[in-house]
Amino acid sequence: MNLYRDLIIDHYQNPRNFGELKNPDAVARETNASCGDMVEFAIKVKPFAINGLRITDVKWRGVGCAISTAAASLLSEKIRQISQIRQISQIRQNDMIDLLGGDISHARIKCATLPLVALQKAIGKLETNKLTNLPARNTTHSVAGGQTNK
Ligand code: FES
Image (cartoon, rainbow, N blue to C red):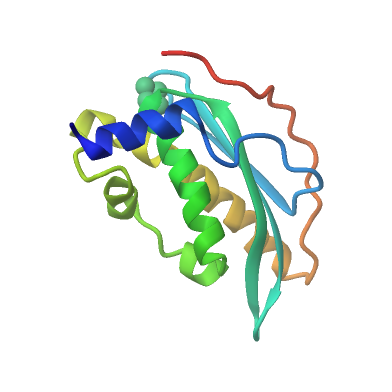
């Protein structure tokens, strides 16, 4: 029995925080050009401490393989656990590989990091908006939710 393989399968079959977020403060997506898979992250935030922001809600959706789906699901759980944007911004490729159990082949690194890139883009939009002190209500996305079985 491989616990991490079981973890990936569990999150692939029962993805956490999957769906559409109403009235998000930032939305961004990333596509894997080599396969066409896509992950979109949507977040809501509120001020925290001095010049800080905390994520109060997160949802993601998209179409992807088992690894990218599990990575998005695990990342969304980690975001809820950490919540502070400053700490979430420090999540790196190696953290994603660790979340997935550390046994990700070089060929699948893009799968493992696809959700992280989408999240980083969303946070980037927040940081741009924060300069004007108003998190934008970006509701222009129109990605159909759902998964495919790959
Ligand atoms: Fe497309 Fe994994 S095969 S993201």
